Structure formats: structure tokens, C-alpha cells
Amino acid sequence: MPRAGITHDITIRSYDRTTHRGFMLTRDRSGSRAFRRRDAQTIRPRILSMGELTHAELPPELELTWFQEDWSLGIGGINDRLDPKKLAIAHKMDTTVPGVLRPAREANLTEVQSGETPDNYRPSGFAVVPMTTAASTINFDLWLFLGSHAYKWSTSSDDWSRESEPLDADVYYKNALIFGTYAVAPGGYAGSDLTDCAAPYIYKNASDTNWTSSTITAGRFRYMAVGRNSSGDEILWGGNHIFKTARTVNETFDDSDTTLTLDAAASGHIAVNDIILLGVLGAQETMLVTAVSSSDLTVVRGYGSAARAHSSGAIISLYQPHVIKSSADASNTGSWSTAVTIGTDDSPITGLVFDRDTDTLLITKTDGLYSYASDGQVRNLATLFR
Image (cartoon, rainbow, N blue to C red; front, side, top):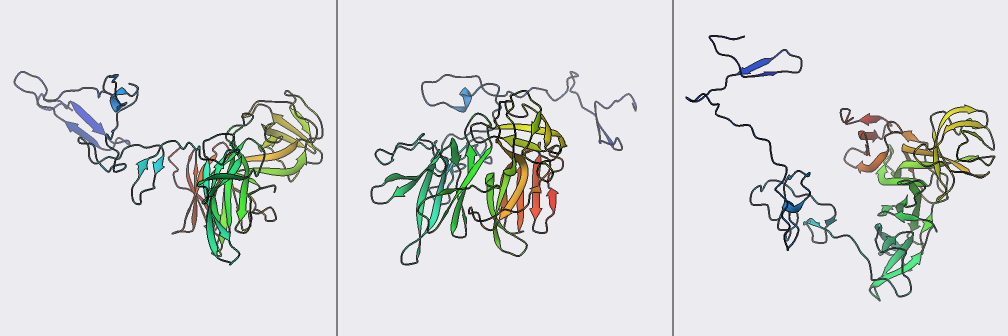
């Protein structure tokens, strides 16, 4: 309310409108306010220099948050002269110097054994694998994954020697986890028929010479983590899953058919609202199941991938990007637990981390952060993230 000819120039209210704060703005003798309003400049104008690219030459639509000019002591090692409290942004990290983080260049491998040229020269993962020697002592081998091939470091010739190709397909492998005497590396698919999906993982025991590709029904996970169960025993977790069912297609159909006939009843294997995946690597398609009647499925075609023709006998898998499973034996003679759903399938899992301080599995998804405790409870830790 105006009082004595003075009005509030600024009023701040709380969200429920129960609290009001008014502020009077003074003026000088000329009647001007003692403050100015000016929009922040996103970035300095582009300056094309003859030397190294600087922050000033970044695209003008990017905001200038902070930059670091000297990287000799790592990120934050020599702070910017104008803002010494902030951390620079980096994409890949080099940790070869203990206690120091430095930006790393893109890995580009050339030192491979003569005559063993890989399909590509960009490593996707590494593994430090325990190795049982004849004297029953434990040593370690260093492995490198290049596309679908596995390379072993040769200490005698100082180069990478190609030892095995676990699966002849367009796949790659991430960094391996040590699980007991095993090393296990999750696989990813690099083909175009279904992008960013899991491929069969690979494993290697300490006494094995080569890597083995998973052939069991629960053999495809994009992410893995080592944790412990409610009994305190070490287990292996897998997330963002593709599960091979015991059902196949019993007919040949084209890219427009919406009714599929299976080789047997779908009950207990496939349900309404499941996302199914047909075909093997290189000929995959995902579909949404809208109705189930005995051995017939009604589906939505082109659901996340291009529709295509399929032949009789095509394998049907469940596409479960929101599912985690655990195993005490990751070999092909082992088994995986029943599925645990984390949130909904329209928000895929993007990472797994096991917190050993609380015996809790942390699951990152596109809609937030979830936890799975040893008592089986699933919690959404970021309910406002959506």
C-alpha cells in the first residue's frame, strides 16, 4: 500500500503468497536510480588467431563459464588468474601421475604386432586380469579391447598381440571388472539396426588363455558393477538388459505386419506392454506388445528401430533397459537372478555404482538416481529430477 507518497519499487513474495517484502529504491538529486540493469555477455567476440584455439574462439552461443590456460599441473593445478576457485571442464582424464588429474588425448593405438591389424585403432576398454601360474602364484596380464578383438600386452616385444576374438560381430567391450578369479567386461553393439544396445559380455578366468563370450539367456548387459548381497557374499550386478526368451516366431512376416504368431503360447514369457526384440545382431528390431492371445502377439512396429522383415525361427528377446540382475557365477555354466525393475522402461539405466559403505547399489537413469538395498527395497533418491 502507498504510504506518505512513497511506493515500493520491488516486491518479493513467497511461493504461497504468505510472506511479502517490499524495497524502496533511492534516487540521487537528478532523480536517477543508483543501479543499472545490463544483460550478461555470453562470450567474447570470436577472434581468429594464428596460434592455439582459446576460449574466446568458441561458438558464440556457448556460455563462458570458466577456462584454464595452463594444464601443466592438471585440472585446477594452476588456477585462472581471474577466478581461482572453480574447476575446469574436461572430457577424458589422464591419471598416470599419482594424485594428479590431467586432460587426456583420444586414445589412438598403433603399436600392434605385425600382421595383426585390428578393425579399428580406437580402444574401447582395458582389463588387468589375474593369471594363475604353474607355481600357483597370482600375476596379472594387461589386455586391450579394440572393437571385437582382444589384445594382450607382450612384455618381451613391447607391443600388443591379438589373442582372441570372443564374438565375430560388430561389438566392442568396456573396461573389465574383477569378480573373484574372473574378469568380466560388458559388451556394446556398434551396428546400425539397433543403436546403443547391449551385446553379450565376455569373461576370462585366471586359468583361461582366452576370453569367452556369454551365450546364456541373460548374457547381455550394458553396465556392470561388483557388490555384495544380504549375506555379505560378493556378487556381480548387470543393468540395462536384453533377455533371450524361450520363444521364436513361427512364421515369416514383412515390415508392416502387426500380428506375430509364436512357436508356443506366450504366457509366462511375454506380456502386454513388454518391449520385445526380434532377431540376432545385425537384424534386430524392437516392438511394443499391445495384446497377447495364446501364441499371437499384437505389436507396434518401428518402436525405437526401423521395421524390417523377419523369417520363421527369429529369436524373441525382452528389451529391458530398466532392469537389473545379479549373479554369483558369470560363466556360461552359471545363472542370473530374476529381474528387478528400477522405475519404468521409458527411462533406461545409464550406469551402476556399488556403495560399499552402505551395501547399496546406486543406479543412474535418465529420469534420476535410484538405490537398491540388500533388503530388496528400491528408492528414488531424486524425486524432483523429472
